[in-house]
Length: 57
Picture (cartoon, rainbow, N blue to C red):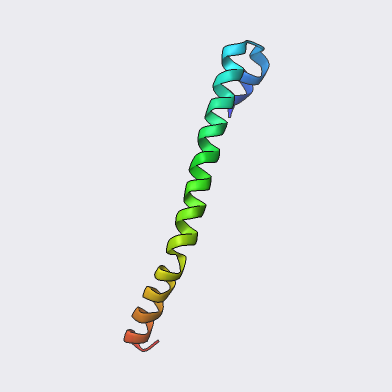
């Protein structure tokens, strides 16, 4: 967190540009994770239901 604070206080263009780039990469990773969970969510749920049904829980 201290690095982020230093970048915000630095006022230098490269630090701000780096912060924006890292933010965009983080947003892209989050979007990809959401899409993967949406696509595989039902399959994972069915797998757990099958396992719990097989165990008899």
